[in-house]
Length: 107
Image (cartoon, rainbow, N blue to C red; front, side, top):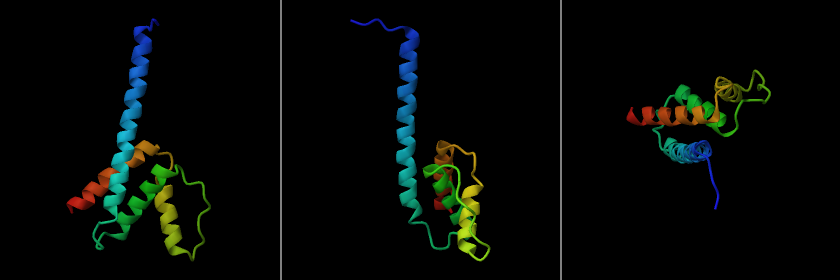
């Protein structure tokens, strides 16, 4: 028989709630990533780059790679899209990614 203080119970509840919310966020993010693959071909390059940058930030974190050379236009654009999110938490990147996919689905 263990005695647990109210503070300890609250801390455990908060930690479990946070973990549960994070798991829900990851599931929502993964569902949005799947939905993003079905966006129309007419989705602008700008919007595709925003999604790319948020996806990389959510999965990897801050961009610590070297910037591609000047003649690698596609690589440079992707690098810059990811680098724009530097300092953003992975959770915030997931939330922004989900919102952007929803916005693009609505047209």
